[in-house]
Length: 284
Ligand code: FES
Image (tube, rainbow, N blue to C red; front, side, top):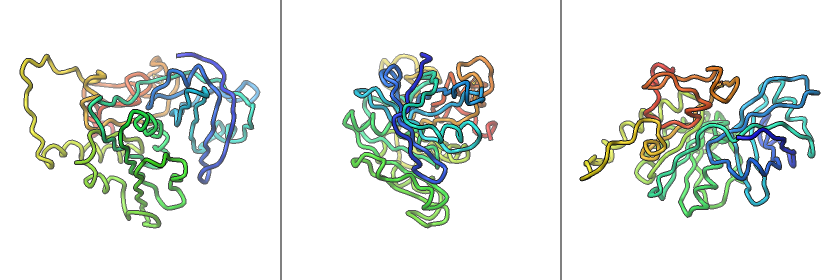
């Protein structure tokens, strides 16, 4: 983890009040993995002191660039939306734990609700670069808030659900899961907590619906402990949790969610968790 400046290269409004910004940050682009985030601080002259966490949306390691995708939700993001190329932001990262893809997984299902696309977007590139197939299920309130398909790689299968039926499936993005659950070797989700909780419930019943047998393997060593990269890799569903943050380095406990083994800091133990690490009822 390092603390350095990123230089803005491009900034554009891709949806109403949602911005995509590309930064030169070679020190970050070289080591970040899909699912991790940066903690950003605007310069002193902005008059704003709080840092803000942003998922790393895309990474270009060759060019040493990353992008972030955010919605204007307060003074900080309003200020950031006014930045111009060559402006600089202080960035701390990469932070948090990334998505864990099982080396045997060939078909990855990414599920995003609204701004949750920012949390899973980088994984689509990582997966395609390693020869995997990717489908993205995306949910929004209406067509006006649907992430543009032009910002996704051509190889991705992109399926949309809108609450009002103005584009794609009428209803929730979670309705789409059953049609993909047999195809997907693993699923990765980011979005509002009720959406993640609903997906966790669906994932919990997947093996029974598909008739997947759980057989012990001869000579197998003890199962990997909950929360380890190995256990997460074996989990069918991983979720990236969104939470307000203070320090982003595990010190303030301002980002805690309730896990089945007790409190979990989203900035340290997360933001990515296996779905079965979270106590969804207690967190609701
Ligand atoms: S934000 Fe301080 S512990 Fe996570």
